[in-house]
Length: 490
Image (cartoon, rainbow, N blue to C red):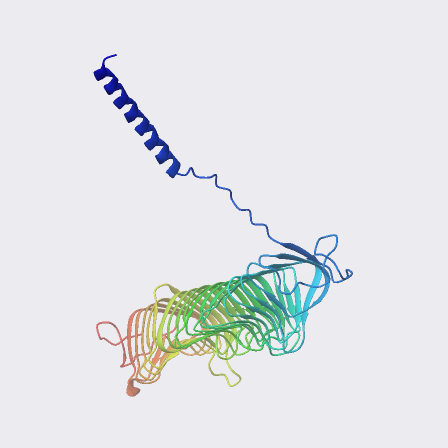
């Protein structure tokens, strides 16, 4: 081999050795990822039996005699039938689960269970000042609360409770109290006994489904709360079944029987109610003061002397509503606005002196409008009574068997009706006793009434009457005119 070729070969070998060294250096610096091993989380399970001997280890074969204190984080504690003395503090994913008849008890002045991010299932909580104080993330199922001295449950954070029974062993306490900013979701739950307020909230959020009360004075009392209620039932209460002041309310489905009031709304609450059935209220069925209300597909029966609907300073829309067998008043409206669509009012009795008994009684500047039909029948007073500068504009109105009159308008009120049908009843069909204005495009009167229209012209009454069909004669009157301004003649 020639010297020149040998030198070239040595250079080539040195270059190859350097490349191999660099490759090994790079490979050595780059670590191969290790396989990912998922860490398994095992929840601690503990068995407790109040009737077991002391010295158990918490296994099913050798259960503990008492609930461990504190309850281990994330533990599931299985409680066999028995009586367990509190107080108990639960958190960090802990769960108490009752197997059989399990009763947690507390002494006077204690909170029996304090919980946050925890679950209680199948337990009875007896005694104590408070049965449960719930922080955030508390879930309760199949629970029974009784014997508390102050409140059964207090919600500071969020509570979801279902299939529960709450019993007021002590008269006048509250059932579930929800703090401002806290939330309650209640499903398939029943309150019994003399609770002052079954559910109480000020500034909280309420979601109630299939909740019932038998005995509480008030089922729900909410101030400035956001409430969504479905399928409620309350009977035998001496206060308002539902009371809301401020906030927002959405109610779908409720049966309210025998309370002082069925529903009371005030202080600017924005309420939407549908499928409401109110019966046998001692004072009145629904009262709205300074509120906004949309009411539909509902019925009111046997309401007290303050009427089925008592509305003051409110904006109200009423659609597809039936009112029957009530005392003294059907709908009473004072100031504000009232819209009516497909409303039926019947069997309104007068008071003992023979006054009132009006289906629709409006006064003090309220504005009433109707786009659909308005059917009024069997009335101790008038079909429509308008007074004190009320303004009423109606479409088709049918009034049957109104003892006083179909339409009574006085004291500066203004009434216009497209078509008024009057059947039976006593007195004149339309009465205008003083300075007031009535405009009827069509008036049909048949049977029982003394005359179609009676108006005191000298007192300032004014009636414009378009088409008249009547079985009784209309007497000439200086202030009963046709649309052209001519006097109506017999």
